[in-house]
Image (cartoon, rainbow, N blue to C red; front, side, top):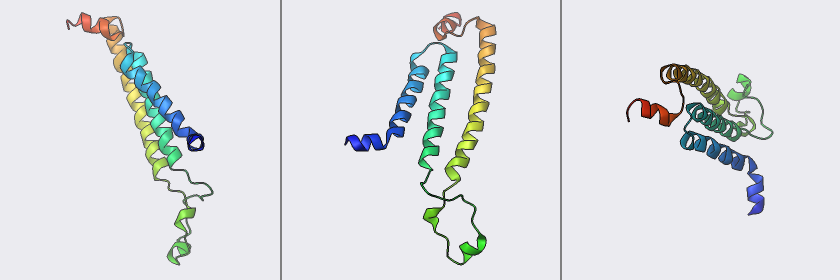
Length: 126
């Protein structure tokens, strides 16, 4: 059993990082810390998907069309580029969301003078 745990050490690291990000989103009251927790969580998911898309001793996904038509192509020897492409898109979306969130946090700070969730809720009357 210990050998199985050691063999999948990267998954355990991902779980720990996800829990750190999740704790920061749920447990912290400062909105910047919540945003950092969200970024940690998102980065961990991206790393997880990239690591699951890796094949050992696989070639790049550029295939000669004549080899493919002749049936000489061995699919197991070619890496699937789809997880990497999707995660590239997720990175772009994540950077955009972070930028918009920082702009909103700047506006909230100008309006209320704080980024602490409890103080903001107190000021709006809840």
